[in-house]
Length: 192
Image (tube, rainbow, N blue to C red; front, side, top):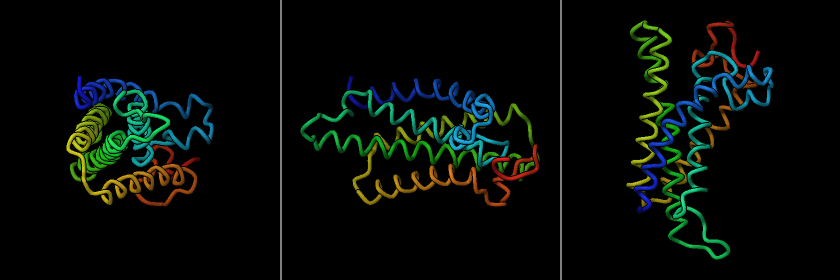
């Protein structure tokens, strides 16, 4: 099987795994006894921003695991291989696109349903999670398969994802008082 076929199979399996991991990820903070370090990577309250972590971190970890396990993506050590480096660059671009488009889909869907239409239901939140994950994985796979010739575009995607990951951790502890960070259950912002 060629690299694209392996990547597609990895991505399809990843959807199922990420549904399960994302659902479990939601409860890790409470299961850890509300450990502040665990809270850096998992939702610490019911705000929209914090729920982005159930997509962001599992997707990034899944794609990094794929880069380590899919043979044509593994580096040929000790000598460098230009083809492997190009494939890895495409894979990392796919990871960035997957994570960022899943987040964008979740935020757009949530604010459309609750803000614009005034609808809020748990089953819709779960459906939105599954849809956001599917959209992210599909967009990431497309970015990997199509690739981008421009090094600048790949670097920009990776930098943007790094900024989102960093903000996700930092805003857990130093939370802006903006609507996306507001927890309707505790009526507070960030880690309480």
